[in-house]
Length: 303
Ligand SMILES: NC(=O)c1ccc[n+]([C@@H]2O[C@H](COP(=O)([O-])OP(=O)(O)OC[C@H]3O[C@@H](n4cnc5c(N)ncnc54)[C@H](OP(=O)(O)O)[C@@H]3O)[C@@H](O)[C@H]2O)c1
Image (cartoon, rainbow, N blue to C red; front, side, top):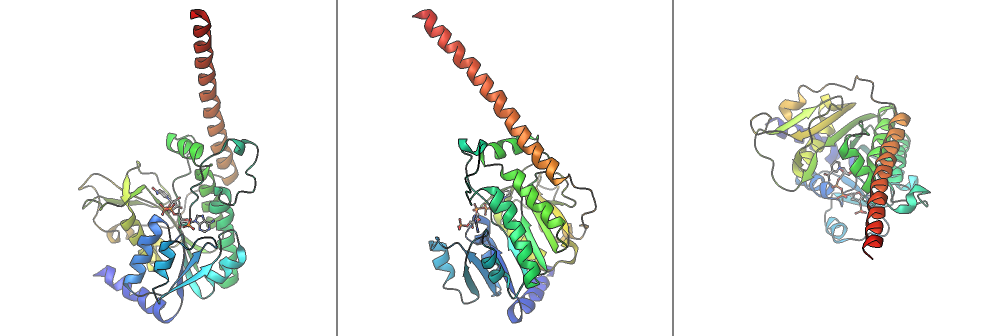
């Protein structure tokens, strides 16, 4: 009932007035978000990377309510074009770049690196939003507050320090003076979540990592467009054991408050992300060298 009311509010605003901009519409989560917005025939503007005329984009071309803007998160002009006449931007883009050995020395200006997609990209969105008067940015990240957690180290080690730069992007949003909603989901999947399993924490508070469906995170993005409680919040969205949570976000959103804690300092946190990864890499390399040395000595011994 309330969900329908919220949808009607969004529908009136975005059918006759502003559009909603979506960045990352071709991704797993993006497809669910676009589907939810299209169900209500809302006006949407999506960013399409120049080199990408994928099946998904070709499919989107069939919808009259979707306007496609060619560009890239690293190209400020295209973001300004995207955000013109929109009052909400849903930022779902993420870097899938795998770590490379030469990263130790330099990123070689690789625009697919998380520093560009998750950090400088967010700075571009904020700058464009100030130019176009876009009022609200909804951003999907992950918990990057604890650089020494095993999850952070593994994701950073394999995924080009994406946790570090996602956190830096969050900090930019919190300092931007533009209304933001940051959503930190658990491990997203395509299945349906079990009933009475959804949980939500404000202030970026930690919840043990569990799965959460793309569908429910997409729904949380839709609620975030108009729900009064989500302004300037950092929300952790996850599932828990059946019976301990809710079946919809609405009762959980009632208890959500604006960010009011001191989030960890941006530069110190990024430094810690790098130190933890270099430290663990050093340990792993040392163990590898010791094992290799022992194997070589053994081979020499038996020869
Ligand atoms: N999957 C999870 O379990 C999980 C958990 C926590 C947080 N997250 C975060 O949630 C977000 C969405 O996840 P997902 O699974 O939907 O990711 P995904 O399937 O990998 O989609 C990534 C999206 O980002 C776009 N993108 C990448 N680089 C871009 C650039 N330079 N300019 C514009 N767009 C760019 C991609 O567009 P193209 O089609 O053009 O490549 C794609 O639409 C990501 O930010 C991710 O880090 C994911």
